[in-house]
Amino acid sequence: MSNNPKIMTIRTGILEENDRRAQILRRNFAKNKTTVINVVSSPGSGKTELLTVVSRELITKGLHVCAIVGDLSTDHDAKRLASSGAHTYQINTHGACHLDARMVKQGLKTLPWRDADILFIENVGNLVCPASYDLGETKRMVLMAVTEGEDKPLKYPTMFHSADICVISKIDLASVAEFDEQKAIQNIYDVNPDILIVKTSAKKRIGIEELVTNLLAK
Amino acid sequence: MHELAVAQSIIQTVSSHLENKNIRKVSRIYVTLGVLSGVEKGALLESFSLMPKQTLFHTTKLNIKECELVVYCDSCKRQSTIKNGFRLQCASCGKRTSRIIKGTEMTIDRITYE
Image (cartoon, rainbow over all chains, first blue to last red):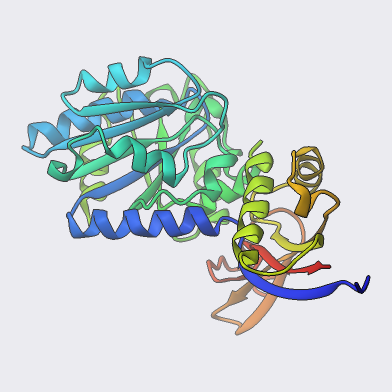
């Protein structure tokens, strides 16, 4: 047996398997005309609160809403979101820092998602790991709360670069937090010139209508 | 810290390419990581070394090539490398550009085996 190592060219994405699963999900979502939003942010940016308010708004419009909620543990967020009237399913990742396409597929089994006009996937609160994992979503929405400061996009460029919509949340707290909005917006565009920015406050119902319109836009 | 999951995916992906092939052991796996891939080189090497591996990968070394962030400017018709940070700006005219040429890679390029 020769000791000379042989070379084999592979040239494939490291996450090939997840990407393949996500593509199948994306095709099924498109066929079913379900808009799917992958919602990402650090913990405490207000994902659940915003989605609860937005879901209520969509349901009032006569749309069907489903949501998959990812957390390391507890079903608190799924319960909160269900108060809007959305069908929810909680995934507990038991330590895993992100959702992947396999978990989403699993979650779909217990949700009436084929009736849904819109499906939210609330990812695990984390601005690093979920960035690399395609979930078959139509759009990716990243939240940054005014209380987090202006430089989040520069610290977590991969995530902000991968998103289609950036929500600046808790905008009602901007002056208390001494949030520099111009600087924040500049930082967001610096890492993603094509992103759409929407300012919201779930508590004060600011920007909700604008966000809903953009979520449903093709 | 998703590098452990990434390390696992590297083994899985390579394994799936080795099915039905007569291979005694994989010596090295060569991967490329763009600086905007979100995967940290040191953490991935550490994760890879800590992972329990089946016989084929027992002594496999991981080689990581890091790839700089390169953008293309539509106005200047030029490429530029982003040196400091991740602001997607043309080095010549300073305009923002979303056209990334390199830097988001997360690929397995080749392996050596016996």
